[in-house]
Length: 213
Length: 223
Image (cartoon, rainbow over all chains, first blue to last red; front, top):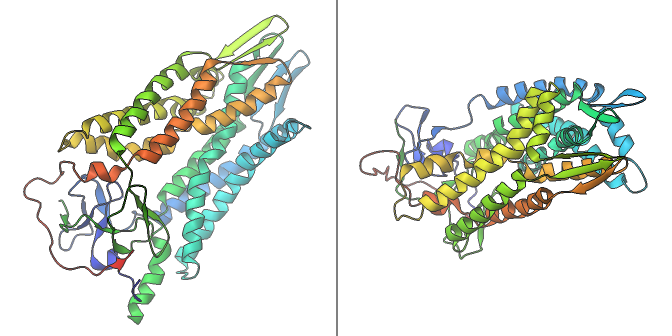
């Protein structure tokens, strides 16, 4: 690899996110369309940091009711009883069921909060123009992108528990308001990941290399 | 306004760090990674389109089975209940959680269905020497259907629900549960055999007229 890396944006070249083709926008224009697939092209995702922050803040706000409000209400002869996500984890904990309990704990409580923190860290370091650990930071971004979908697991658990346990008047299970906020956290964090442009991680490094070149 | 291309499709920029580089000509099964950020840029697959077509056909059959028959049934003191994949969304809707019901329906039924349909259409359409533009229009949306298609996550969720309920009543796994298990493997196999570059290389371009190239030299790093 040469000492000073050649960056597409510095050579006024845009790479298509959809089909991967490299092309040059018309003189003086910051955006154009991919000649091969027609996708709108910009040098970096538009308003990437603002959009990422907006989705992250929305996710963080929904995270509170998602964990405090019950997600399921079980109605038996003894009356209705509501459980939050954490109570669901505790209920699953048994000599045989503990691995599943751990899966739900990871997927529903640890992954969403880790995702919010990791993306906030990435966005802040980009805004401060950090040049260290580019490789580790882009790896963190890919890990967040890869693991994010698994936090949907609790939505499916609750949906199918409610769908199956319909043994009125003996016992029935219904979703509770917390489920909506929990699903919102998952969707908002997925949208935040999609809004963040990993190329921003490298821009400060590239700018510095260009100065020294 | 369409951009001008460079007249050299092997010259690319890394999607994760924007480093300019030239893709080497790879042997089937080999892959190229970005020297700066280690992103996998391309993996050459053998006989990609025919294999993906075969897998997508299999997936479409399994998908129909997975959605047509019950997934779980339950027995407790003379009562019986069962649910399909669709039933999970319907129950949420009936309980007043319309938005979550929509999300479950989209992630468990709609997006996987679209993913299979798009893959079938693309692999069939790309069999021509010069695939028409609708193939590209569909392929453009493939990544979105992939992001929101969550069969494997749902299967884990169903498994947890099954064990939770098993403490209260007898749960009988239905045919759809096994079909969903097969579908997870088929989706993984499609992901491993499909090479979008092979389609994009031959597709009819969106920009009309002669393929005017910029034609100037661009410095590059060697991968």
